[in-house]
Length: 165
Image (cartoon, rainbow, N blue to C red; front, side):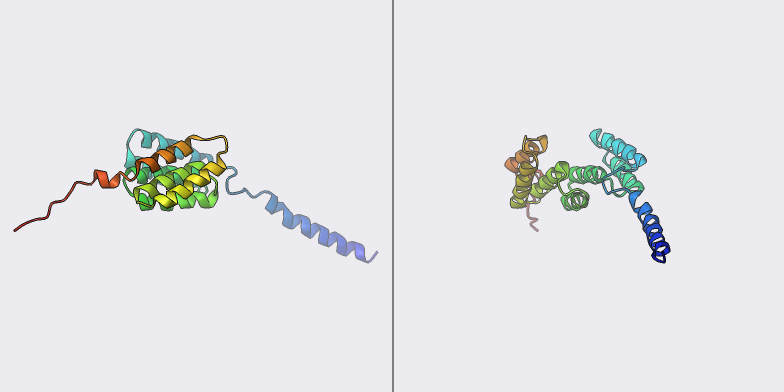
């Protein structure tokens, strides 16, 4: 009889402590809808070639909810279009911290690695994609084509001629 009050107190304490934990959201669960809407707008701006506006909108999406891995990946695509390949890799790393098997982030990261000349690392990303996408997904073909094409940065840079005095 003397144990019953103690057991009840411990039981109530356990219930009170467990209640807030069950209400918490997980990293990829229930991203803020405003962040998702901003991410969609940023993706549309990227598709229309408005890179600065797309970057601003996607950064706002991340400010609203920093768990929005798709916004990180789309922002990496913007950086890739701006030839900021190191930034693209850093942004995809952030997306991969949230979801390590995100095929879009892995592919975008691999393409940026190719542009920087890190083809071996890009091939490691391709192997990871092939493991994740057993039935084949468009990201595998996308990264495979980028590896086959090779870096385009060197081809896009104009040749400089030495100045003679």
